[in-house]
Amino acid sequence: MDLVATTLVSDNAVHARYADRPDMGTATLWFEFHVPLADLDLPGRWPSAPAEARFINQAKIAALRHLYRTIGSELARLQDQTQPTA
Image (cartoon, rainbow, N blue to C red; front, side, top):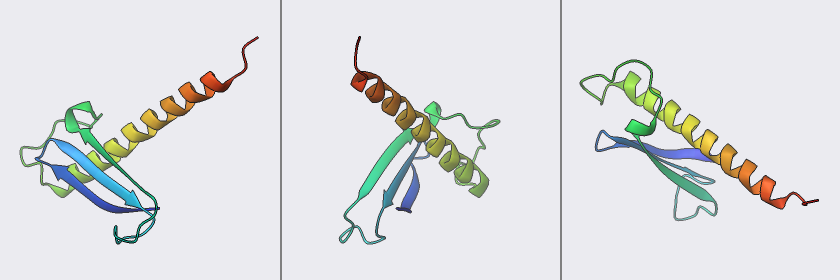
């Protein structure tokens, strides 16, 4: 899967889409996520102009890390539920 779209939505959230094909009409696997910037661990202070390339890259990285932690937590929760009880 590859990143096919990433945007800052209204300068207050990151929205991204990963898919197995760049053309969503032919994609068979994809996922999207939307994370508010306020929920992200962004280094330093936010610039006054959020369109700045460095800020956008930091926001993308932070959104992916947020998603990684969220998926990891959900995997752990589901694995705990499937463990046999004594």
